[in-house]
Image (cartoon, rainbow, N blue to C red; front, side, top):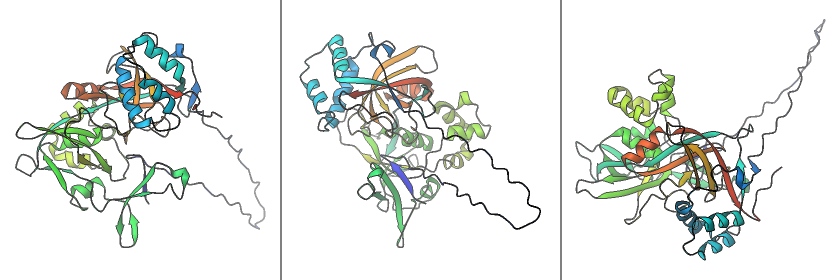
Length: 392
């Protein structure tokens, strides 16, 4: 069966509808047939509900200046789209706007909609990610022996939207086997050397390499001290499986320990079990070397991410590039974290309506925040006036 990916790395799941056939036998006596009641059809709640600005926690006092920098990045990608042309044109003429001018801009240009889960709940999971630094080399050595792969030549990406418009933005990943297209190789198979693979770099730590795939971008520090940026190129089409959840199921860690730091600590203590654990996640990400001069990694929107003001979302619900007001708390605390973010990235593990991954930036401190972040949060998405979603 094919794996169909949404944007970078999501899949379309086909539901199998049961066919029920009723038959009668000519047997005497025939017991009475008891027909169970048909359960009512439950229609999922709409993902959005029109809101008011005063419903956004701290909206009147949040600092919008950093959000404005991220918003202008979104406009670089959206300014030619019909729904965004007027909004981005209005943004271009604002010169050094203060906080009040920015608040007025958003209130006049957008309508806020609160995001809800299909069951009608308003809270969801907010996690964090960052841009890690790995030590590596362009050639394999005794120290650097774990490969960072480019997108393989035998990986096929098929766009079905021209034939099936309802599959817009969905991508099919696979490979040719004779005249058949079959799923691409899994992580275990790729680690075993399957596929037309080309190494970009070699790094020293397999766990750091694994987490680089989860983060989607990072920097490789070479022997001369130069930092080379790498970013997401493609994915093998297999589903993402959390190794943290696997460790909990195995009884190796409890829920409080299953952070990035906790998993790394477990790996240091259990090197013989590491390969088998990593293979529990069949998803595999390939990379490309990014041009020099980029100040930040590129998100799925194609623009540089802004530290602590960009988020990854599920684009099946939240439009890429849209402003999203996030109300959550700082990692491992009850301290409120309310700010205007920009939906500029996606991720294989980011699935659901009220679901976001908070980009903390580059380096160890950002990694510490990202690794600890597993908070509850609410989200409001801003739609340009005149382009609001139609709600049933």
